[in-house]
Image 1 (cartoon, rainbow, N blue to C red):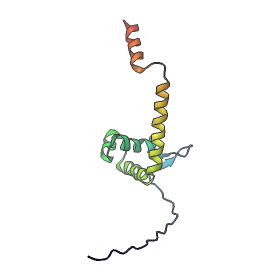
Image 2: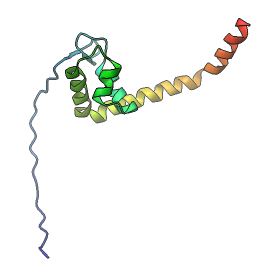
Image 3: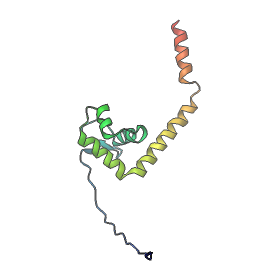
Image 4: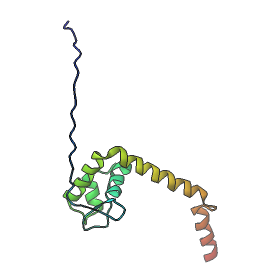
Length: 117
């Protein structure tokens, strides 16, 4: 049986600016798909939460072009941990606000139905 050797690997990193085509930044510094209303985080959320592929995102948003969607997915995977953290924080905040509501949506709908009778 051959002897296993331990080797050390040195990883050298370079600081390079990555440009994402088809993106602009809004006043708050969020990445947006240029010429559209979409935030990159919105498309990343559909991919992450719903499991939508690039093709499904294109089907759901026919106003987008393939290069825009795949650039957004590239950005998502390049910044995966940060974007997932932001999405989870947003979902947590939304759930916390929902729980603060004194009345549920179902109760509001029942109340509305009762008023219509």
